[in-house]
Image 1 (cartoon, helix red, strand yellow):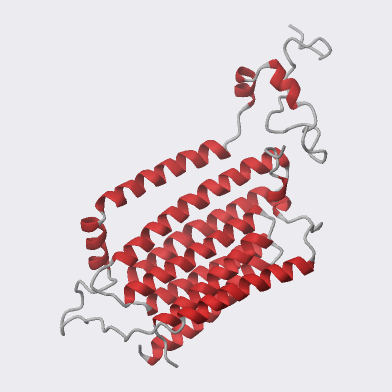
Image 2 (cartoon, one colour):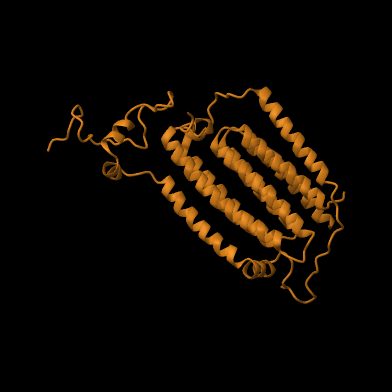
Length: 102
Length: 226
């Protein structure tokens, strides 16, 4: 079995697809946030894989490092919004966030 | 890539895909969180096969140590309310069609990029008799890249994390009763006692704005004896 750059990119594309399906099909905000994490992780895998085949610089790994930091901040703020939303509506379903609907 | 590396790739890739599918398909959010934990751990293994040692450690620390724990905290905080309701508006036909279409797109992309195969670039190892050197993906090399080439973005990320902490605390912290008494007008507190106008199923009282004290300036409320 020959494992090259394309294998990693294929795996990352499949993981991104799984995350996208989860984000679009689940209604719980918790599960949607977890799907976002899966998608961000798959993008990180792409960046690190590209960096492995260009080892003269660390640009991909540094970028993945920053993506991890931004993802952690996003998860913290998203979960805080979820708690506030649950306090307001007593539910975690994103379909019920419809106060702006005319 | 060595045989051990290929074995690690196959095992971790399979675990990552299965755990991702379980994360988005399980109905109990706590089980989804455990599946997400397995997923990020398998991705740390994949980073190891890509010679990104420090990034694998950071992945374990940040995701397995902080993000998943944060998810579990929130699930525990919400209690049974974190469960999805059983009433599902989308039927299995639309779900299957949507998932099939997205799987088709992801599969096409995966098939297309799977043929990209540049020749393997060897990573120079440490010289004999030297245990530590500034090798690709190690702590020395990556921290030099971060602090030398990306010093300003790194500081900006620390500012971002500080802002995110403050925002999370501000959003998640409810207001105390005294703050509601001080800031809310009588009209707002009267409005808070109505049902939600846009949502017939909402609870009758808006708990975020509810104040248990007597409303000032309203005659039919039993006023406190003074």
